[in-house]
Amino acid sequence: MILLLPMNIKTPPDALIAHIGENFGLIKPVIQPLGDGLIHQTYKASDTTNCFVLQRINTLVFPKPEALLRNYILMHDYLHKEKDFEIPEPIKTNNNTWLIVDSNKQVWRATRFVENSYSKNAVINTEEAYTTAYSFGHFTKLLSVMDVAAIEPVLPGFHNLSLRYKQLHQAIAKGDPLRIEQSNSLINDIEERKHLVKLYESLSNDALCPQRLMHHDCKINNLLFDQLTEEVICPIDLDTVMPGNYFSDLGDMIRTIGCTENEESVSWNSLDINIAFYWSIIEGYCEGIENNLTQYEKEHLHASGLLMIYMQCIRFLADYLCGDVYYHTTHKEQNFNRATNQMVFLKKLENFLTTEGWQRL
Image 1 (cartoon, rainbow, N blue to C red):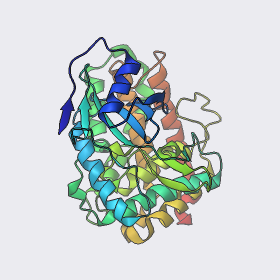
Image 2 (cartoon, rainbow, N blue to C red):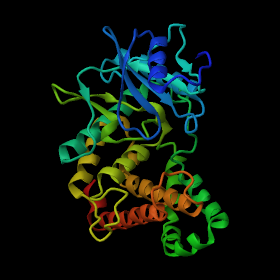
Image 3 (cartoon, one colour):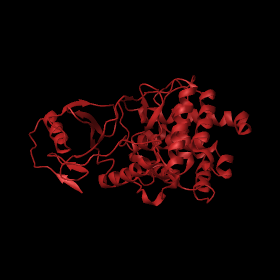
Image 4 (cartoon, one colour):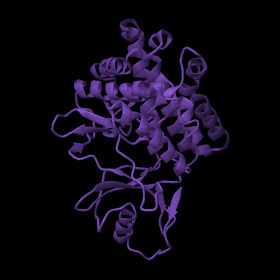
């Protein structure tokens, strides 16, 4: 259920956020911006007794906020029993609802703020690469007893490579002719690797590669750390937890952590695979997920990075051809550069796996 607040469009933003906090049970809360997320707007709201995280849900990206809450509550209740990763408690409103719609028709939710916690912005050494991969692998392992079908996919097709490849061809058919001409070489590189679409379809349709509850956004800044022990408390930003395959999480960590440059870099001559990070990610993920991987999946571990880097290259290029309608850009060639960045990295990974990677595991 959603609690509807009275319309009051002229309410100043700070007062409106405080009013949201009061409807979640706080008394004259102090409001502070929290984090730098690109999707939702997040605030820390506290009074003399309680401290909550208030979040305005971006319903353009997540049009079914009720599903987000249902999924979250199911995971919270299950993990609360496990006492291992215990995610922040969801908070109800004074009217016993989970969501509030404010005067501007924006949807809000609240969770309990985890005291003495912090997040890290980037992986800086092999230990952090291992810890990140271990934590997300262990998260999937903990959720393995849950019914996968109980969690509603809130972003259907999010990591569906076949769909993304089809969308690229739609963009080539209908996109900007000048941008398409400029991208011919990159399009050819993508077409030369069409076998990765077939590999994706083979893996995702094989019973030996089962669906599990995957996080789908495995970055170190989506982990909470304890300020005293430096240990991981739990994963956060769980909106993208959906049924998926092992290569989604493992591959995206290889894509984002295992590269010497980030996806915005145009230093393509220096861009390369961080080999030490790569093996830390593989080791950490395998140890975190424990015996949950099938032998078939273990034999195809190294496909993960190839699939996810290839898919992200396709997504950046398709958006570029369509006029930059999805990813935020600050200059007109940014998505083209991002796609090129991913293709350069993909070629580096291909070379690495050909020369030594497949023989190591």
